[in-house]
Image 1 (cartoon, rainbow, N blue to C red):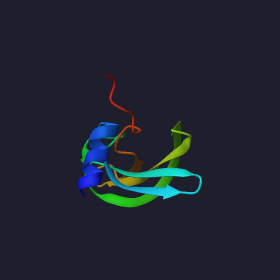
Image 2 (image 1 turned 90 degrees about the vertical axis):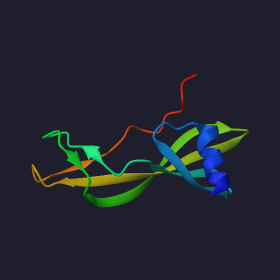
Image 3 (image 1 turned 30 degrees about the vertical axis):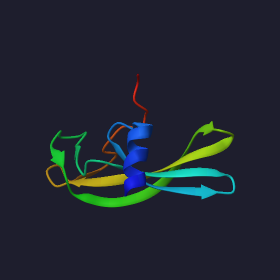
Image 4 (image 1 turned 180 degrees about the vertical axis):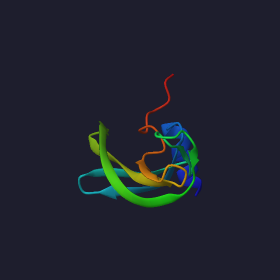
Length: 99
């Protein structure tokens, strides 16, 4: 947990938390999650908290020190009881803090 909290601070992903790190033959993979478990419904604009499905996706990032970097990000699908529709998302793509 200590390493993950330091990585979250170091990488400064706004709204995201680093939960793990994997070293592979072809590069490094950061496992990150969104820090909130809710989103605004894009159809009726109510707050959705019912998570229907989560599927991980890999995003290739810029190389660091000659290592290919991947971000393992959950693609979350929420269900809105108000308008009875499914929505994917719940946050922007992980972007570093602008200095």
